[in-house]
Each structure stands twice: as C-alpha cells, then as structure tokens.
Length: 95
Image 1 (tube, one colour):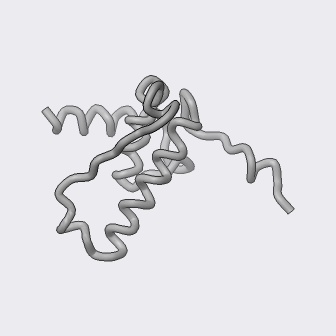
Image 2 (cartoon, helix red, strand yellow):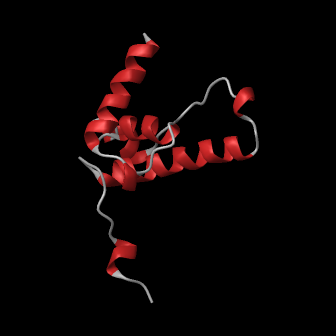
C-alpha cells in the first residue's frame, strides 16, 4: 500500500519538479562513477535538459540542483541557501 508521501514530496524550490529530479539523477551518476572507480577517468560531464526543464529549468533552480547533485547532495539533506552557496562557488571557479 502506498502513502500520500510516496506520491507527493516536499522539496527544495522554487519548483521541486525542476530541482529534485535533476539533483537525484546527478547524484546517482556520481555515485555510479565512484562505485566503479572511474572518477579519475572523468574529465567532463555534459548535461542536456529537455522539455520544461530546458525552457524554464534555470529560472526554477535546475542548474543549482544539477551542480548540487554532482557534489553528492540530495534533496532531503540540503537547504536552498546551501545550494545557492555551492552554485556561486562553482560559477566563481568556472571563470
């Protein structure tokens, strides 16, 4: 039997549909890379967004969620301030 909490989840915003999925996906990718001892072989990762994530993802926080997920963070263990701080750090390093 499913609970209402299996269907609906409270997540980070401003749009949890644009943050939780990408963050979880990126987190899983990094976990698999580490599990298979491939981290030293990875030089870059390209992320492509489609549909509503491509059109409104940045405004809804998908970019911040993707970076957070690649850093191993999960929606249930991060707050939006921490996510923004990490995003700012990565943007600064990129320049």
